[in-house]
Amino acid sequence: KVPTSDPNGFDPDDDGPRIGVSYIFSNDDDDEQDDNLDHFPPDHRTVNHAEKPFDPQDELECAIYYRDECVYERNPGAPTHSAESLLNKCRPGDLLEFVATGQYPHWAVYVGDFQVVHLHRAEIKNNFLTDVSQGKKGRIVNGLYRYRALPPEVIVRNAVDHVGSRDRELYWRNSECFAAWCRFGKREFKIGGEIRIGKQPYRLKLIFSEKKSHVLEFQSLEDVIMEKRRNDQIGKEAVSQELANHLNNTTQEIKEERFVN
Image (spheres, rainbow, N blue to C red):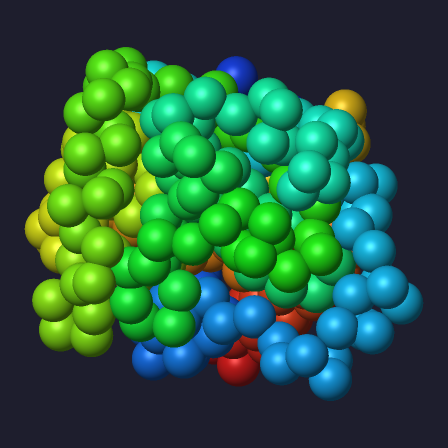
């Protein structure tokens, strides 16, 4: 397959989107190192957080589809709160997302008593919410995935039962997959939860503006999440430029191939 050369991702002669092949710019090893560990910078780097606060304008609107069903949708600019403010809003079983510019979002499950369970440095830990935030702003993200949530007590039990799991005992590639699995209980969030053969049933729609969007195909939800998180880390402008370069290079390769033939 050849990715569409239309940066809008739509064919004016067709009602449906022109879907390009999936591409992930970092491999699993990179994600394991930078994302599965979900490491927070050491204390001497915290000053960088103040220099680059989270910018909601650089957040990319996107949606995930499984075949024709939308299973995830995010509109940019959702308000964020300090860790102290979040404590007044959280209920056991809530999913939390901590965000900072230039970093992967960090997800956690609120389990009550001011504590969260989360995947951090290749280990599932139980920590105080204020400690996990590391000064980052956060928000409750129960509604991003459109799956039916489990009862709060089951969500909390899913999280707490895995505290202490580490390294090869882990079944999740990053903090988002673990937290989402705790809330929804779907095996698609686990490593190898879906067989990556045959058709690519998942689509990630990147929405840059009302007239500019692009759609990519993936074989598993895990793959989609990895790419979505990478986009969150580099930001909307970088993703747009990266995609434009990718499409321009592909178009040039096609022209050169036709010229040779």
